[in-house]
Amino acid sequence: MIDIVLMPEERVELLKADRRMTQKLEDLSNTRIKVEKGVVVEGDDVVSVLRTKEVLKAFGRGFSFEDALSLLDEECVMDMINLKDFAGKSRKRQVLLKGRVIGTEGRMKELIQRHTNTKVAVYGKTICIIGKWKDVQDAKKAVEMLLSGCQHNTVYKFLEREV
Image 1 (cartoon, rainbow, N blue to C red):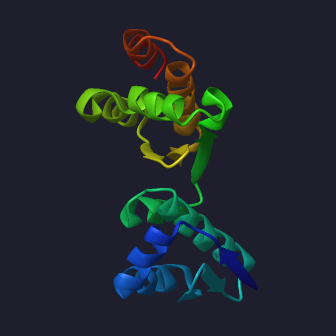
Image 2 (cartoon, one colour):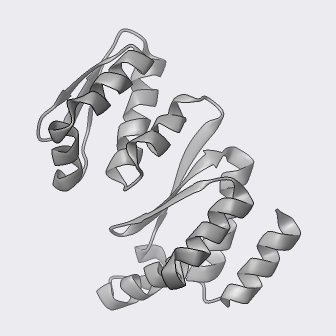
């Protein structure tokens, strides 16, 4: 099976610059990866190709390569929140909402990650979350509360109480 992953050019350039990343992913997933304009994934096992594709999508959405590799574990999932759903097309509003999720000096993002045992990436027009399914749902709820206008303190209390 052959599949293509499209990702931002700057992330493709990072893969091109460090061949060790794709080599490690090939070794772990038993697939072959070619980095071109997009990234081509080839393999005999459909599941391995799909998992590899998910890892590359996560890397393309702003996760570190090591964090993205956690998606090779079948218990891990990635969920994506589109900022357009909360901000419309307003670029200013999207920037403001990203800032609410990140918080002062990254504290809110760190708090969500720590309380839910997940990884959160704020990149472009999306916010992505990687972790076990239940943990991702908790983190997603916290992020959506922030995006909907809840105060940071309210979200903090939610995390303390629910998670």
